[in-house]
Image 1 (tube, rainbow, N blue to C red):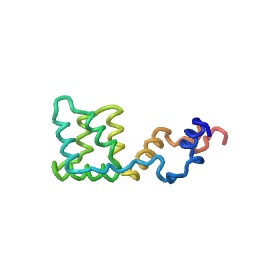
Image 2 (cartoon, rainbow, N blue to C red; image 1 turned 90 degrees about the horizontal axis):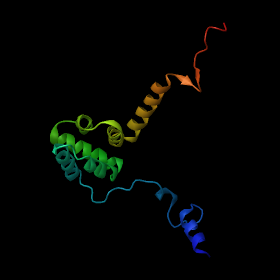
Image 3 (cartoon, rainbow, N blue to C red; image 1 turned 120 degrees about the horizontal axis):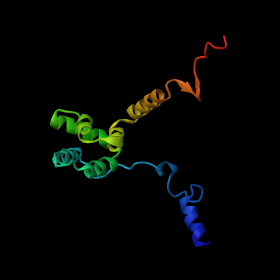
Image 4 (cartoon, helix red, strand yellow; image 1 turned 180 degrees about the horizontal axis):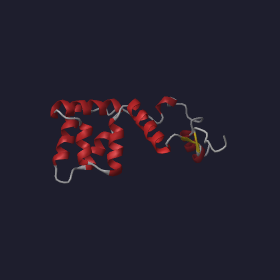
Length: 137
């Protein structure tokens, strides 16, 4: 068996069944996650001059959604204000959008994306208005 074939078998879903299909593409839980510690790090990074955006990204992208929800809850308990609203005042642009998306539950994110797309298209389906015009009547 050639080396290329071995590599392709490892990369292919058909070739290597040693890992279950459910293991592909999942965000793994951060094993050493401590919501209290993460909330404190986020709080500290917001107090630094110029806001330490790298810390936000490193913490929030390496945690599962459930862990991010725990961090947000812990932050709110410690500071008596929501993490999302605090970050809104400190972030802007695409980074703000990404961080907001990361802090939503999957259901909240799906709902907000559906709403955003429906507002974007303004009730239009495939380039035509949903309601017929009165010109032909």
